[in-house]
Image (tube, rainbow, N blue to C red; front, side):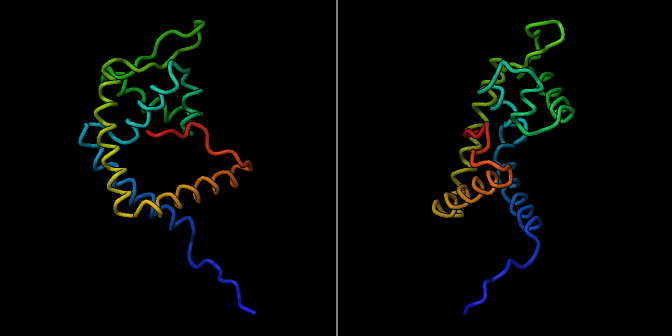
Length: 154
């Protein structure tokens, strides 16, 4: 009877190492547009989901409210996003501006370049397998078989 192999090393360390490598790859390419990848993601989420309340946006992006507020400030100051009045005096809505749409379009070209380069480096089959494994793992860890919400091509 053959013994079942057990994972060696720390899964968290390996995943964090992979994420850092992939993040550096995307960061370098998206930076050519003048945006950080986090800013590109924020513009993409607001474009697809907005106008949206900050609390709902934070939930969709999987960040806490203070992180979102910190990330919104420079985007609003740059004129890419607005925070306007909501349905009542206590609520605000985040919306993308025309300048924000143009900046997101510019950054999307660089994001696609990063995606295509990563696909070429790793190979399409490996990327597809990685996506499936990650999606399944997220679903298991979330205690559901649904894929993470808000999953769209950036």
